[in-house]
Length: 161
Image (cartoon, rainbow, N blue to C red):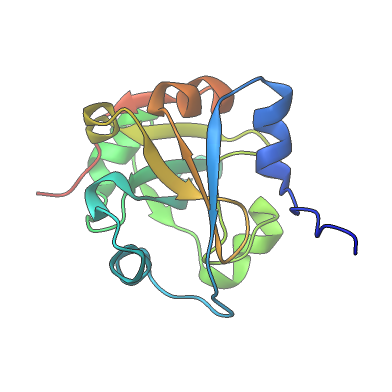
């Protein structure tokens, strides 16, 4: 009997190409659940589990922000971190068209285009953080500095109080 081959996502292939150490976790999930629910279901710390948010600035450029699943983004701080007057969240229906990913499977690694990316400073509190693996039911565990390196991101304080 042939061994079932692990299906790699685009994000995982990019990490492999860049020789980044990471681990993958998969879980049963057929539809979108928020990140806090997934972290609780899997017994993971929501502070080290990060979600990917996509915004559009006044300039019409898109920006990616990576923050803990149990926190909210401060849109003013986020805009300031990328040199915009303001940013607003893109509509859920536009996620796939803009990023190539679907809601619940959106990861900052391997989007259709390389957008300016900002990772919240709290990521630096951990040796390893958890992000989406590029599809629903898939997670990537990696060092925050490796995420920053592979996405050409920067760190900033972008959380609402």
